[in-house]
Length: 249
Image 1 (cartoon, rainbow, N blue to C red):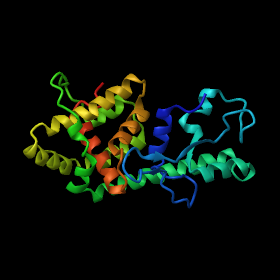
Image 2 (tube, one colour):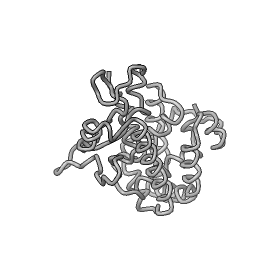
Image 3 (cartoon, rainbow, N blue to C red):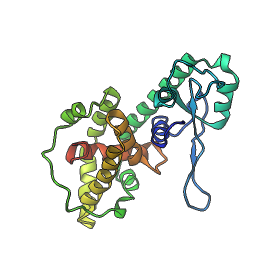
Image 4 (tube, one colour):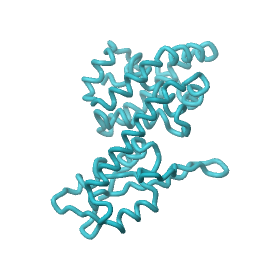
């Protein structure tokens, strides 16, 4: 048994697609030279080892615990090798601390970049919209207020901060959506359809709470590189969190 694909996606998102080792500047997804699918270089390194002879193995853990997101740290191949070869320098507690500090910095950076968002970043963040068609069969629900959605979905403070920061630029996103609708009247519904399709796919797979929210955040940032572009993707998600039935279920 190894970490599932959604777990690895979640780990990469919370790590900002960068190696969590202090001072390592490596971005861990690289574009193909002549187009095509990007290559993921990052590795989901186990903090407490996965197998009996692995570094920092803990016999008291279950396989599920060993491959859970909380026991994984996102690293480049070089630093994955280093922590496993220099076990005395990288005990479990130290790696948990590295993981926590790195992921906190990533979230702080994304939240701070909301102030850098403009129409250009929002256009890049929603370039995928034309792949979707409005779904006339989607029923309108009685929308919940953001705070009610947060409670209903058992979202913790980290998600709450991102939602609060995203709501601070909701008017800008709304103006952008209205501007795009002048060119393509179906644009708002295309945007909604794309997010709802991914939301219900993840829901059917069993994802809930912060895990579901962060996987939706990862979807909103897919293919985006710059900090302001990635935060623009988050801003669109939070706009829909407030304005439509994403996270209503």
